[in-house]
Each structure stands twice: as structure tokens, then as C-alpha cells.
Length: 173
Image (tube, rainbow, N blue to C red; front, side):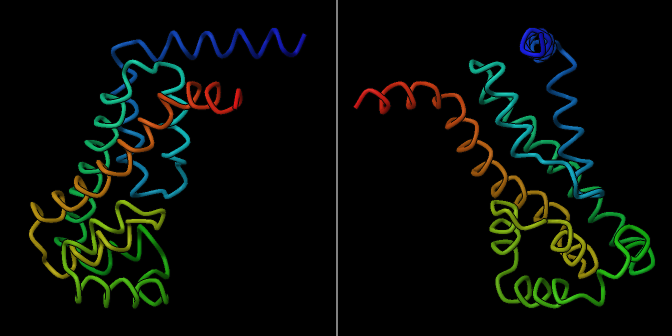
């Protein structure tokens, strides 16, 4: 009985993944992730691709767009409202070890550090805030996030789209 209910839920989710609103929803989740830090974006990406393999590129690119919009808004707000805004969004961040390491990393490597953080599993929120507070160009912040996230999300999406083929191929060996 439970298996039947799970199957119905998966089919409903698969149908939803083909709706016009689904990709903008993914972008919204990616943007919100810069503020709340609990959206498992990689899991959302892989699940979405598994539900609709033919759209793996568009799924990845919509999530890149959302991350870029989130980074732009967070950097803009950090830039204009300063440390008070940062403390409201992420209490204790300005005094954390993560903050100190991020400041040094961005000072040493600039936008390449931001791109590397965006491509990694590290939270990009502190880097975007540091860049915003240091008045790094908003365009450069967005560009670095796009470079980092595009690389990461396209690799994840491609792997998810090919995953079942790889499993079948190598399970026969």
C-alpha cells in the first residue's frame, strides 16, 4: 500500500516538473538559498533532472539564474545597508572564523575565489556578503557566481541525466 502511494506521489511530481512554473520555482529556490541556507539545491537539481531527463540543461541553467539573482540581491543589500543588514540576515557571521577566512580568501583571489566558492559545497552567502561590503562590482559578483554555479550544476545535471544508463552499463560488467 505504501509503495502505491509513493508511486502516485512520484508521478504527480513528474507531471509538475513539466509545468511552465516549475523552472522559475527552481530559480526562486536557488535565490532564496542565499538567505536561508537550508535549501538542498544539489538534491533538488538531481531530483528534478531524474523526473525530467530531457530538460537537464534548462533545469541547471534556471538554477544558475536563481543563484545569480540571489547573489545580486544579497550583495546589493549588503553593499547599501552594511553590517547592520548582515547581522540581521546572519547573526554572528561578522565575528565568525568562516567570515575571517572568507575575507582573506576573497582579498587574495578576488572573483576567482567567489567562483570557486560558488562551485564548491561551501555556502556562498559569506562570500557574497564580503564582496558586497567591500564594494566589489555587482557585475563581477554575478559573473563569478554564474561561472561557478554553471560548472557545478551542469556537471550534476548531466550526471543525473545519464545516471541510469551508467548504472545499467556497469552493473552488467
